[in-house]
Length: 313
Image (cartoon, rainbow, N blue to C red; front, top):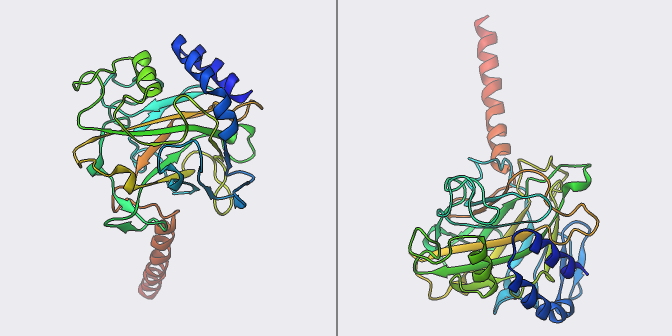
């Protein structure tokens, strides 16, 4: 039922009719192999409780079972600090794909803030990290972090479903304006449906499938709660080994779909821009510990200054 409803929603947002036929053909397989990673209340996957992280064992691209979805709360995470490469926004259901082309401000699909905060990325821009998010030179993960910007603690609309992520690489840009063939929404959907954006490196689902999805709570932190906006919500760790053969100069194209699993009316998009950033070596999230350490270091300096002022008096 969820997939059928999502297909209907997709068609209302300028989807091409051929999408329906292909998606209908995928429906039986998607229903059988689908998995939910519930980062709100927890889901048991292969006997392991997925409350703060999880992976999809089936329905993903080759090797995709090694990709990890994990709760995270980098603070602060506002634009300018967070430095997104993809920003998108739409009511209920939304999708975005990063490119510097096809718009100034409003872009293709539901992209916003092109090209400043939605722009091209090259494989060489990414840094590798280990499972503790410390930089490594090889054998690690490429990390993509989401600030969902949904409503905060106590609000029913703080939930959001992450219904697909697809990552491609290509020697040149796949978008019109930089020599590619994708120039509008319809062409983007066709390319994603047929996986012709480039070399597919990771896919959360079969083309146009949404059976594998992640549910997040934008007000949840690993400790306590947040206001929704201003802190990140999830990080996706994709094994760097999936990018074997890609050149540092290759374009990296990141596509995502959110809000398709919204049966209760509270898991769709309903607030600010969703934003994704990649971790580039030194840009490793610390959950606000840097600010905490800085504040701790300033306390003795303040006391010392107060003491000096007192002695002068």
